[in-house]
Amino acid sequence: MSEVRLRFPPSPTGYLHIGGARTAIYNWLYAKKHNGKLVLRIEDTDAERSTQESIDGILDGLTWLGITWDEGPYFQTEFANDHTAAAQKLLNSGHAYKCFCTKEELEAKRETAQAAKQDFKYDKTCRNLSTDEVAAKEAAETPYVIRFKVPERDDAVIFEDEVYGRIERKYCDIEDFVIVRSNGKPLYLLCNVVDDIRDRISHIIRGQDGLANTPRQILIYEALGAKLPTFAHMPLTLDLQKRKISKRSHGEIVAVQYYREIGFLPWGLTNFLVLLGWSSGDDQELFNKTELLDAFSFKGISRSNSIFNYQKDDPKFITDPKALSINGHYLQSIPVAELAAKVRPFMEKENIWDAAYEAEKKEWFHQTLELIRERYHTLVDFTTMGRAYFAEDFTIEERAKKKNIVKNPQLEQWLPMLADRFEALTDYNKETVEQAARALAEELEIKPGILINGSRTVTTGCLAGPGMFDVLVTLGKERVVARLRNATKHFA
RNA sequence: GUCCCCGUCGUCUAGCCAGGUCCAGGACACCGGCCUUUCACGCCGGCAGCACGGGUUCGAAUCCCGUCGGGGACGCCA
Image (cartoon, rainbow, N blue to C red; front, side, top):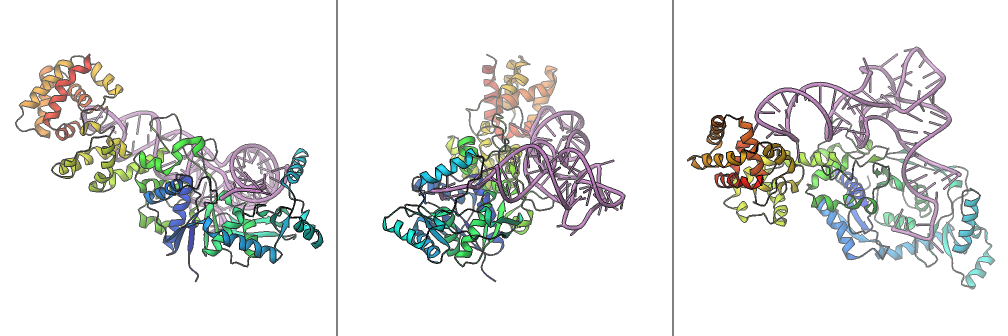
């Protein structure tokens, strides 16, 4: 049995596109599942964009996601000799020919065809040149491109795609495509095949946009006498308007780095991305790595494009709500110690990190995380919605203020009274706090909820949260008392 | 224009290959109820879909044809 070898060939763009990430994930999963190798190959032939910085952007994204590769990164430019050698080989074997037509000539023909609403295909002018004619052009040093000589046959190129099934493309529908530019540089179509042959790639998993290229690439494989890999094309991810998602039109939400910034867990994103175009066949949607490896197969890959459900103007949903939901699930279920480590950089960035959280306050910190993580979806939530637990500079939600403060102006007196009661407590715990609060409510002849919600608002700034008495204990007597006393400022 | 691919709830999808168990199942979102001091937690419930038209069949989401809709590829880009 031959070795299972996959590859992920991104071009350096400075960031990892979530669509690219999904492709990488599928390749990685397949390789891992079949004890194969994943080769990382940077397609850096576009010198303009191929700065070290943009290469790092890709590697950085992959690393964060936890996608590990076994070979590479290789760089396409390092194999330029292979590409030109292959072109020469095709020329020598009669699978390709020199084409002396100029860009201008072709452009004119293309326009004529378009004007007549005709399909344009290269008319093979140079394919039919006599040896003498070719020799004359060469002697005159006429610039030329190299075109692939597509066999003139009545039948079709046929291959079996692991996702799309049997695909056919008639030979007569394939034009003699260019494989080498007039400046001597081989084109992507050729380079890609040559690289895959050299890297002994056995399975090519890529986006459906590569599907139309495949018959031409197969022709190259055959002409080069190489064994065909297995192809598996996956559906594309589009936006709500069914457009390809791109950084240019959608901004940072297409970059995996963005998800790191907004507090996604790598696995949360991975799990979401995997589900975009693949399903296990049963109703399972949450997978740990082992389960995913076990469940993943080409069979579950969908053939229709999927839509990244993202609405720009909804502040509640900074990305696809399902992604948030899945991330929230992992946020709530990973071990607290792990969570603490993940939250730390976010708190540091906000200057609300305290070294003691890893020392004498560790237990308190973990308990607090445990208490508040229940309804959070991203790591930044701990520094925004959860800010009041770690800092004094939290803001009070407008809605909470309106609902719990403004409606009961007398809270301006009541809250400080509550502070006094709490302060007087010798044993400040969940039970005594609750008793004290309820007792005061009874004396004032008001519903406990008024007091409780009022204190929730001034102590946490939030409308919603965990059970109030847990919160009060977690916050600690001192902070609670101070915040309740200070409440008067909210009535100004 | 040519070629290729796709079309099940708002979104991700199961079911389609081997037609009946599907007046179509799950998840997210949304709505309602319960719980509760609150809630974006939890529990319970609800809304909502086989693109359309023919055909085959006792029976079609599933098979066939057509229409419409969507996407992709057609570069001396990658």
